[in-house]
Length: 389
Length: 142
Ligand SMILES: [Zn+2]
Image 1 (cartoon, each protein chain N blue to C red):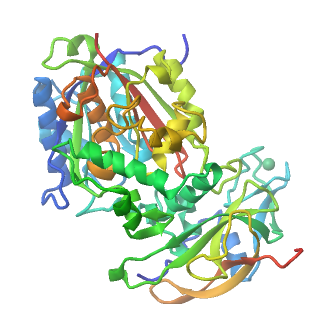
Image 2 (cartoon, each protein chain N blue to C red; image 1 turned 90 degrees about the vertical axis):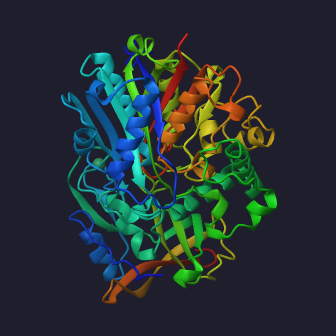
Image 3 (spheres, rainbow over the protein chains, first blue to last red; image 1 turned 135 degrees about the vertical axis):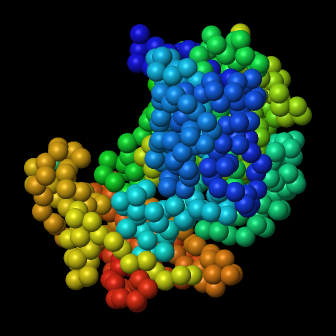
């Protein structure tokens, strides 16, 4: 048995909870976290008394998970995973929860991400946090500080390598906004045109405003328990078929001469092997989209098309609802909101439960949800989820 | 836009910054396997050796990418260019810097040969002097 296969489909997501998405929540990240967890438990038909594990990721911008557990009213905490990291690490808490449940360390783990990403600590300036990267020192004196600047540097390389045009990236933003228009939770629901996209102001060339994710105050939570137990709960179980991690390289470090080949491209075959599935088995993909170029990059990295072909795949409509592989069906970080990848996992779960109303992918059985593909961060991860038979 | 941040060196990077302040552009050369590396690290990620020397870089490379940052109107800043240069010395080393050219990046192209120069700026809240890299188009035939 290959590494990673031992817990295939052993754990399941039994509940999903969201807070409201806003630009100013007016409450602490502790309150956001507990509210989202309460909603997820209610969705699962469980109570706080059932919770014996907690897992989250944060970058010094969110409440301590032990405090969240105490505030939630957990009496006998058996599993804690407090991951330091941003978008690249966003699958790690879910992975830890699945392993803990499969190994019998805990029976019911709540996983969340809570942030006041607009009114509090804004991720756009995260590069100036020396704890996140020792190499930031080489960029900061050039006032090359923000995430849009970093990803703009990458975006030009990616566009140049494959001849990707501004319109190609515009189609990503337009498609996701069209999806968000069907999503009552989304912060941005007004459809946009190519003129809107091309006319949006420069943030850092070659990235425009409409290439960039939103900033949100919000929390999302998931309830993870065994697949067997999830069958007896309220909702259609969605099993965690496989998770994987990858990376190990950063921009401007030795041995990484091509930043347009992300960790995800190296990791994806392992993910599929662990799942016993391939790209053709995926019905929808929720791809980490802090910036538009990450979407075509990941379509290639995860084998949905050949390198350099993603822009054509998007132009052909394959990634829109009704296409062969709907992508970011909730609108993604670009249009639903920025809950650091966990809103993507939540959407994948809701799609596999067939609860997405107008934006439902008919008959969805298998979904992929990804972390930041490893550009700059040197780390990535992903999960494949399956609707329980 | 707020003050230009002053870099906060660590024990690995301090000699590199000190050299730059003397207008020297240096790279680490592993004493065991001879590979060059940058950013500065105390341990070679090729062979694991913790012995190295600081070697002068050729200062030649080619544009790998660039950005033109447009600070928001409220920040009051003007657009500015930052380039990323792939070094001729070893093609897996990419070094950022300013560019000696127009602030809209006109004339830049991926692959354009460039050479390292230096510039004095003020950085930090107290406006200390800081030497940074400023790349310029390579002289013809250089
Ligand atoms: Zn060495």
